[in-house]
Image 1: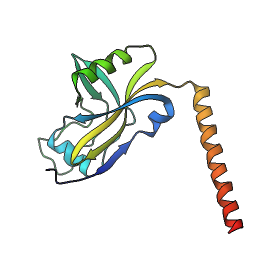
Image 2: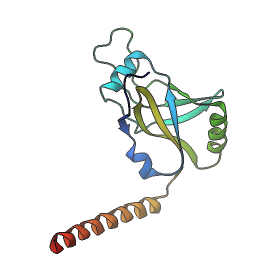
Image 3: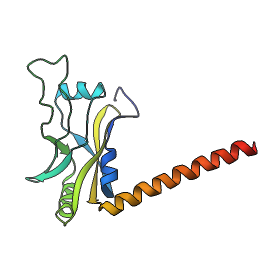
Length: 158
């Protein structure tokens, strides 16, 4: 029985959602060292430059920054080390085959604790062109303006 219940988000990768069309998401476990878990429990991590590679039939999380644990000793971990993702073989094969296609990559979207276990949400994604990014920003801006206008009208009516 886990001591913790629910989900506690540690880090989100907002840049990934801006730079890529997300086509499919998947939750994966992480193989971590003790000092990495302690550092994550302090809420310290960055997914900005992270990506996932398939190597020898296993998936690896690369270039994710989990800073060294401040109270750690010689057993401390390196901040940007390669971390193994815990996935079923069928999931690995499916993602690896799709990632082989031109323009696809696998990126981490969020890092969180779920019932006391470290998890990462990864996504199969296709890179956006510059005009796609502009379109996304324009849509977001239009939605914000529409919501503001509705709030103003509700205040006037009430």
